Amino acid sequence: MAPEELADLLKKQFGEKIAGFKFETAHPRIEVRPDAWPEVARFLKSDSRLQLNFLRCITAVDLLEDEQFAAIYDLLSVRSAARPGAAWTMANEIAFEIRVPRSAPRIPTVADVWRAADWHEREAYDLMGIVFDGHPDSVTDEDGTHPRRILCPDDWAGHPLQKDYKFPMEYHGIPAVTEYEQTRPIH
Image (cartoon, rainbow, N blue to C red; front, side, top):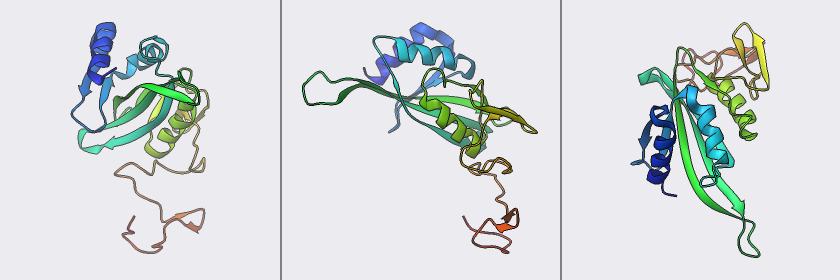
């Protein structure tokens, strides 16, 4: 199914919950409002025309100039092979973008829809600071309730992939940058 056909189908099914389309890029995607994302996600996976059953990745993007973050979900429809000797076929492939304000970066989890979201949402929280409400592996600390970190230590301050992140010069007495003692380390 072409991205434009898929967008038409979703617009008829969900109306204003579909916030926009970006087909002129090398990475075509459909923008969904954050509060509608779990409902749309369940439809994408279960509808027999789509069967987007494989979450390849979630890419977290810092849109500092717009004061927003975006989570981009790359989805595929992987099906059993119709011909002998082939492992599988792929019918549909599309990305979905969920934008949230940097001041309140919260998206409902879809870990119950695609199990791979469990790991990817933890990574997006850890490195960018997007909180996935209802995530099955959440913790509560001084930053509130959020997915458990997956790459940085539990006591790491901040989210290293934010464009305005101030990288620490040391962590528990260990130099955290190769340019230790420089006032403006280069990364």
